Image (cartoon, rainbow, N blue to C red):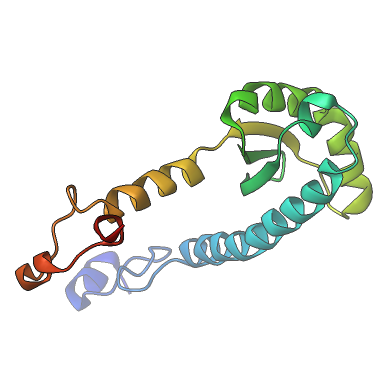
Length: 165
């Protein structure tokens, strides 16, 4: 069959991909991305659990002085870097606590690698997180009747807890 006869039948040339079917490469990439998302979530949770137990073993007075909470862990897909978002109860100690954690990052990484069986132990980057403080501020604003008006105007006559006292 000649090239001219193929053009007349409407058949695609040899080796050309079909336009209506998704390529195998795209399917494989989307499958890998979903797998990394599932595994990455579990790894983040495990890192958070291990680090929270390791924080208790630190002897640095900067870290021991404030109550430290790990709010979120975000690890890259290649497991090389991990961002640890940390919240401190007393905001005046936040910078000192972050400095103490950064100085103990090598020890924490070594212990994390010993406790977890990962191909690579991620490099730890500690970041101050103010999401708890921000959430408390939003909650305080929602409770303030001067800021948020009731949706039902008939409820305006009801006394709030502050007005009853």
